[in-house]
Image (cartoon, rainbow, N blue to C red; front, side, top):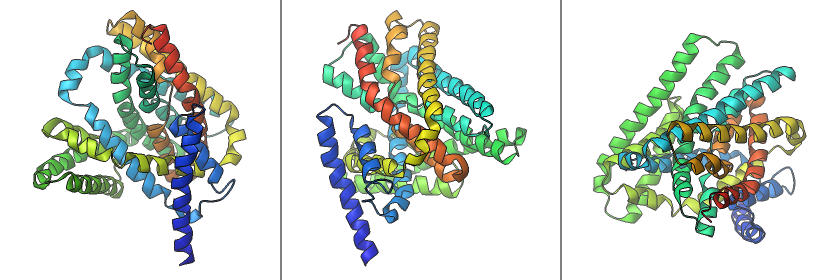
Length: 392
């Protein structure tokens, strides 16, 4: 009974301190994600210890579910109609800025780990996480300053699909890192990774079609919320059970729903009703899981990650804009809006921490600590880019 009361108290502390703390920090222009992360660190076991370990141990379930919701919602951005309207520039820019961030950070981290005398396999996961962008911070700036124009429109489209590439890269990187770490790396490992990704895509598609079929029996919005929540839990749970990527599977299910259902927007709008409480709990628990003692150890590594991720984004945007013959201002200023990092990158970090205890803590601490920095400077960078483009 005492354990139960402690868990309920811990959850109450998370929700109440999260709400009021974020409200207070917003007054000094802290993004909500950063506020939640800092509050999580403060009330977590390493500082005030207000959150019971029982709740901390439950964070795997919450994070898997929330990441499933995020990945499923990403599917809404991949309708054939929207992709055709976006044209080649969006595809070229989004693929190249994510790819260059991934490749450059991976190379830099491999060199750093070799020079430090450490195993190199964590570098592949760090590189994959670098591909992600947090759209919320950029969208907030666009709305706050009522930005309009060519760069703004392209930025909104790129950040909408950017995290999808991160999910694909991370599925490859996590399997690759595991194989290199175990010393069993060979051609079969690469083939197995590709099969796992293809199986995740296929399984997600099958589940998406199945959900679409059964959704015809749903009559009210309340029923839709219940069934959609249950469906995402089913997708994530089965994916984990079958050793597939729950993020990829969830995203593909969302893509299928978005393209074949006439009322697809209702599925995604329904989830927005529960987003605030889910995201609050998720980011606070991420902060509470942060191993503060590892922060001094990741000083140089964290700095390298911050610098070269941004360089990768800028190089990718520049080449993507040139290759697709986009407006010159897009090549110059769009990358400023891609600096923020949050949800999907933290999801990759959590997955690595759960799968690989020997180095997962280091990856998780690096990405969480740098996310706080990115979320603080990201909105300022986005504002700077849009001002330079003349759209604010």
